Image (cartoon, rainbow, N blue to C red; front, side):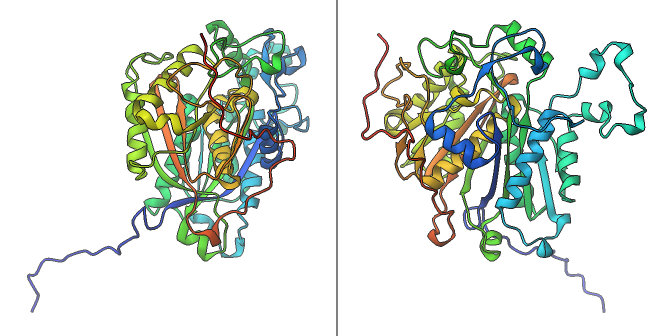
Length: 447
């Protein structure tokens, strides 16, 4: 006799995010400061800047302003420079994660790579220069390079990763959003692993557009043109580079013997309905972003120890960001170390969040808060310590990475050092000449 009892579908219980967090097990970085994560990280410790004034051979048009150009890529590739950089960083991240590929289900390996600016160079070529060889002889055709998702597709194919492939384009917040989406895919059981991040390179159209907006820094010394949080700042410099991260659950990492850089403790996305390129002087939304990040991470009574700021070196960004940090954290803001990497890296636009998140993970690994270079006259917002020209050797367990973007996108990720000592990444000794202050110095304020 058939039963009239209702059928109850029971799904297996999955560990909570707190019990089994998403972790970073592989990092790859490429920038003007180096072709590997460790070379970039060491130059960050040294305060090195390789920002230079653009030249005619750079292919960026007639604008001659400071820029963090990547000069070490081999010539002759048909692929966009931004895609080459992303592929380079992806290869390093996957190698760093130490996979035994025989035991990896590639159908469960996702890619979340931010959009790149498309190849518009072909469109501006004189007709006489187009199609100088048969179309079937081009390795990558211009219409394929034009698609914003080309980098995500190319990386998935190159490394035979056949899980979900996603591409988000949210301006300077793209890198962080790519990471957040990758973590969600793993949490939602769409994938076991994810390769996520972004790459970007200078293009003629974007470079000219920023120059026309009047937001690009200049000065007698191109290398020190960008001065985040300095009262004498005069804009940002564009940079080139990429960073890719490997994400997985902590239980997965432990089961395969992987070492962990950091755990993703929380993530938050909000938006200011204010202006396509400007920030709202009322920083309430930015304050809410920081407050929610801290609450989600469970740090209400502790707060972050380090904030890797967006820190572009523009008056509006720097002032709004510091005021939001101060308002959100209140008196605890005076105990937080804040710094910006853009002073030496340049602003990597779509890739900024990815590279700076990767550097934040390395700061947790090595117990080193990097300096904000070229900071002589700090903006006065309470007693916030923006690390003027000197880093700090201090063990940190809790850090925030913030990204602010055109379109009003406000995004943040909270990273936590893995509490399981046996599964942490081993700290790498700092460079012997790393910029390390011997004591916490009072901030010199502007008059």
